[in-house]
Image (cartoon, rainbow, N blue to C red; front, side, top):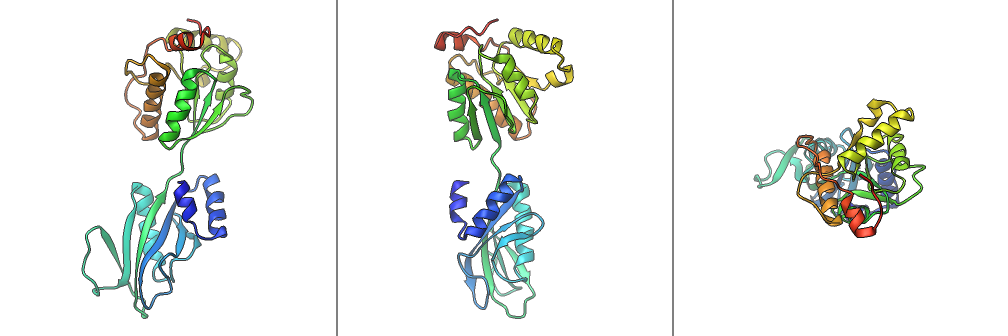
Length: 270
């Protein structure tokens, strides 16, 4: 994603991207890579394209824009980049991997344009200062999650995904903060026995059972994880499964807190 931002060749284009990214708008970057005159678009011209329209930039006149919008929509649906060629019908031979669009422009000319989807990185907030929290923060960043580490002060948190890795320190505070957010997935590294006790305590404090059902725990998928790094890998694998829309499979039933006790000496309670 950072590389794509660097490629945005005008301040206004970069500003537009940043604004639309904050709004969660799906965008594609269209770049002219070849132009056969007469064309108004030139190699290096760029535009940000939504599924509905070109929103900022320049890749040529009205003849090219419908093709770019259509190709961008396809790219955003599939998540795959593409190369398109726009020009007078029948003036070139088919090329493998290139999608041709016939243009009715009287001026003629051909543009070859690279379309690349700019998929927004899912945001992940990791609550806690445990060894597993630190390992998860490192690994998640390598898999294109936008990571925020919150070791303490859980007063204002929000993201797509939240993983609670407090492992004995401020567990209830972290859980309440996560449940107050709009996160689509909340997971906690804890044993089944511990999470049951925490849920019972939170329900007594007035939190509705439907809210408590949002908590996925024990976090992670079964890989026989023991060390903090292995537990982080297990949790991250579950996040990838959720991210890709695969909700099948079971979470693990191991007592995750053992790692916290061995690695940091904290009491994570059973």
